[in-house]
Length: 283
Image (cartoon, rainbow, N blue to C red; front, side):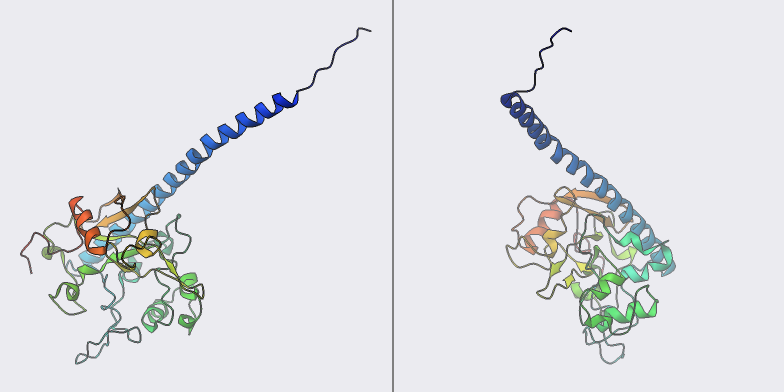
C-alpha cells in the first residue's frame, strides 16, 4: 500500500479562518439587524394606516369631529357645572384608541412590533383609564387593575399617542370636550394626528407613555432617555398619521437634546405641524 501523507490545518491557518469569520459576522450582523428593523417599521406603518382609516371613519360618523386626543377630554368631571380635570374622573368621552374600536378588526393594530413596553394605556392609579377599559369590556380587564403594576398595559398594550393640541382647550379655543373638526384644520395633510411614543419606566417597574403627545412632551430639557426620545424606534425615526388619514415615516432631528418648543419648530420645518392653528385664521 502506498503511504499517504496526512495534512491538518496549522494553528495560523485556523486563526486566519476564525478572523475572517469574525470580520464577516461584524459586517453582516448590523445589516441583518437593520433589515429586521425595516420589516418592523413597515409593519408599524401598516398599523398606522389602519389607525388613520379608523379615525377617518369615526369622523365621518360624528360630523367630521376627530376622536379625543387630549387627556382632559376623557378625564374631566362629567358635571356640567364642574369641568375640573383629573384621573379620578371619566367624562363619558372615550380617548381616541378606544373610540376607534368599532372601526378596527382587532386591538393588535395599536401595538408596534419594535416597542417592548407598550405603556400608552398604563397610567397607574387612573380611574379614567380603567373605567374606559371596563365600559368596552376589554379582554383582560378586572376591577381595581389601575392599582397593579403594568396591569392595564397587559390588558391594552398601546404604542402610539395622539396630538393633544387637536383638543381645543390646549390652544385656548374651547373646553376639554371640544375637538377640532376637518373644517377647523386648514392643512390636514400637515397636522399630525398621532405618532409612535416610547414609555418611561417608574422605580416600581410600571411603564407609562400616555396616549397624548406633542414633540418633546414627557421629557425633561435635554433628556435623551424619556418618552419622546424612546419613540424614535424605527431607524432613528417614527411613523406619523396625519389628519387626512395618510401615514408616513420621517426621520427625527439628529439633535435629541432639543426642547419641546425647538422640536415642534424643527418638525414644522419638515412639514409636520402640531398646532392646527398654525398658518390659519380658522377658529
